[in-house]
Image 1 (cartoon, rainbow, N blue to C red):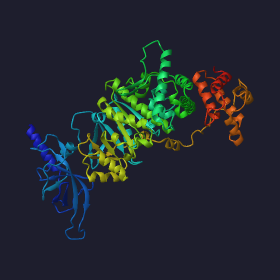
Image 2: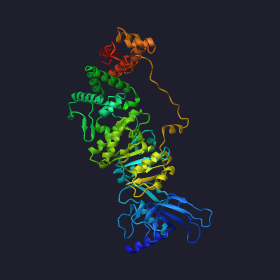
Image 3: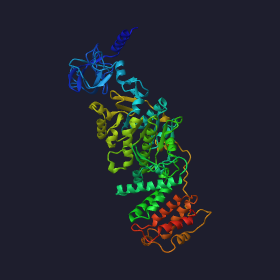
Image 4: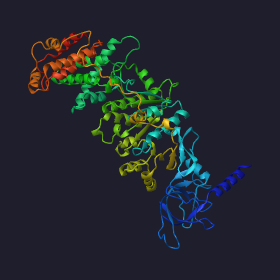
Length: 632
């Protein structure tokens, strides 16, 4: 059969599969009013159009304007005429013989339909022109087109990696299921692509278990030296208002800590001179916590202002080092290569997805993790020259890239903005997931070339979507508020026309479940056993009394602040000493200088006056405590 005969056969098949539904009775620059008709036999239409139906408008042999049904009404429902009208908004044009453009579909209308033209259902070839990818590239199927179950909804992998994606929708609309479906299909189609999920609620581990490496806070390693001076200042001095001065001081301390680390590590590969800022942002160099504490201790010998800041830093380090929520900052981290390998599962023979389970971490710790991970992703992209395609999935994006930078910590926001700006050229994609699109930083949201919108009931979130998608018709915006669970509307560069789809359902074992759901579904199970560390002040092998520690540490007299506290009944002297003894004994097996210093600073912060330096020689006090604990 010749090509011409095939074309004639295709046109004939299309003519058989499409039918007229009405007549155009009014036209404006944005829409047409269609009078709904019955079929030629006089009966009512078998499948009349409804809200969201796509129609093509024009003459029978040249109809190529595509429109969306946005409203239906019957002006005189009880009259003999029984008029039924459709409002159809124009979306664009399909290519036809003699068209002025070469693509299969384009937005906008160049030749408008006229009065008495017809409205027709779409033929299979029209659906292919609208929804099939324009270029040959690997695709993943997310579901089917709403209203056309025979037409699969495809998402081009290339479009995903060359532009960022925003997934927005109300709580419970199916965002987590959409992310899980997307990542599972992506892992099957393109296992070389690395994906890192910042799992805020701990729900993706079970859903992606067979495809993902789950790293909880017990395995997460992001040592302090990975933090930039701004992030370290934010973490250690959250209540200071003189941020600029603190930033300079912390940068100086990091430089001294790096120098101490280099002095001890002169063998092997030569170390760069210092950490600092490069074109791509902060370039960290390793140091140990003891190096930073040593640099802080040196600062105490300088001016009163430096000494006060140094004491605050040491106190804060001692406090967060005992908080399980910050343990990932003090775990042995290894080299940058090892950390990148763990986070991004390199070499690539391993699982393609990494789930960082951040559930239960303090909010400030989450911001630090998001900032460091996004910066590491950019670091990997630059080191590989874009040869390692990767995706970072940020749940609850409104928390980490807020539109109000004053009311939220800035570190994660800046890192996400940098990734959104620079990642596209390096094969690094960002997927922003949010239930409150209106609260996301517009500069980050505007970088998302594609958008998956689930149900959005709040007007302010609908407005954010309208601002993202240029030329979005009111009809599509209205559909956002009534989308069913498991339905989504796709916009952007990956889709020539806004597309309403039904996502494929996930098997029950792959549905994201929050930890409380898993606990409730587990039945009776094994009873939880509470295991609290011993409250004994000393281990059995080293008996001691609080009075002995009192005499050794404070042999002369209590500080004025201690006397004041005793007078007010807030704290007895022996209680403070017992607290110090407990902290010392809890570190009995540790011999590093950091443990001794943190113990000292925790004790010192308990008895140090709120104003002034007090009457206690804190350096002498530290040495006495270290001597008693056997850690010197």
